[in-house]
Length: 192
Image (cartoon, rainbow, N blue to C red; front, side, top):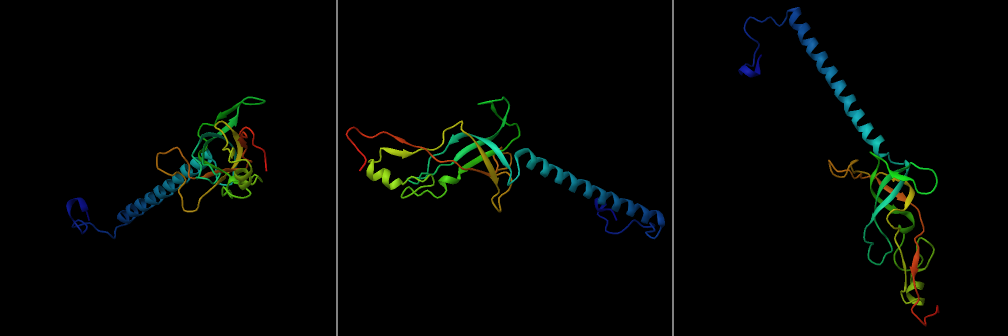
C-alpha cells in the first residue's frame, strides 16, 4: 500500500504475515507514540514557561501603572495599563520593569463599586462633593508611575494572551487603594 503511487493495496508478493513486516509496523507505531509523548511534553513545557514568565492567576506581584485610561463617565472608575516590576535598588524608588513579566490591564478594588453618586469605595460621598462644594473637588485616578502590590486574576474562557503575538496578558491585575479627592473651593464658597 503506497499512497504516493495511488496504490490502495500492498505490493504484489509482499507477505504481510512475515515477522519482519510486523516488526517494522510495530517500530513505526512505537516511534509515533514516542513522538506524540515528546510533542505533548514540549507543549506542556511551553505553556508552563509562558505562565511562569508572566505570573499565574492568584499570584501577588508588584505592578507599576504605565498609563491611565479615561474613566467611565461620572463613575469615578479608571482602567490602568501596568507592567510587573521588581525591586532592583534598596530604599525608596528602585523599581524596574521585570523582563518577561506580566503586562496588561489593572483595576482598583476601591473603584469597583463606585457609581459617581453616594458613598464611594474610599468612603467619601460623591453627592456631598457635588452639592456642598459645587463640584470643585473631584476623585482622581492613580497617576502613572505609582507602584502597587496586585493580585493576578484569570477571566474564565479567555486565553492567556489576548491576541497571539501580543505582549499583553488577559490576566487582570487587581490592587486596592483609596483614590484621592482634589480641587479647590471657589473664592467665597464654604461647605454647607
